[in-house]
Length: 209
Image (tube, rainbow, N blue to C red; front, top):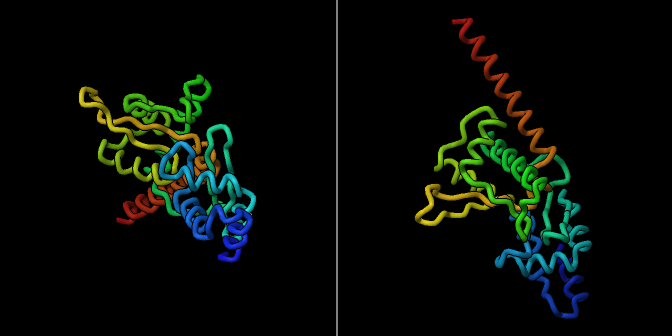
């Protein structure tokens, strides 16, 4: 792979060093999404955008495919197959609810400049109960889940002002439409199957007792 970065560096006429390509690829794989609107990832985004086909060719043998959104200016790395890092049920449910809120806001035209959608806690609480059929996680747990969502590039937590009765709100980011799709529905289905199997085992144990 180092040879690929050397070749790309030469094609850039010295504008970029091999290490620049290596760092951009590493950030793309580990952070999953690079947004041009984020100060920390702006340089890496522009590099990947300029050499998109080359980065896609290098990462394809690793089972990673690239997608880009020219309108909201982001690049996302997705596993070519359904396998990925283990995801808990709470993480799965929250992201599915956030995806639903994003889709609903898109239908209303309530999307901000960089493709983000603001979700206030009362709105999230109502949507969670309606869609999932259970209460929304407590604030502390929700903060932890939001940190995971931030690492995946699909949402970020924004602290509220001192005079705001809610402690924070969530800003759902546009790459959620690329990341939270059929694979997440499959994960939710697997969680449901696991729950059913666990309940069946419990019932058998109770009957045996």
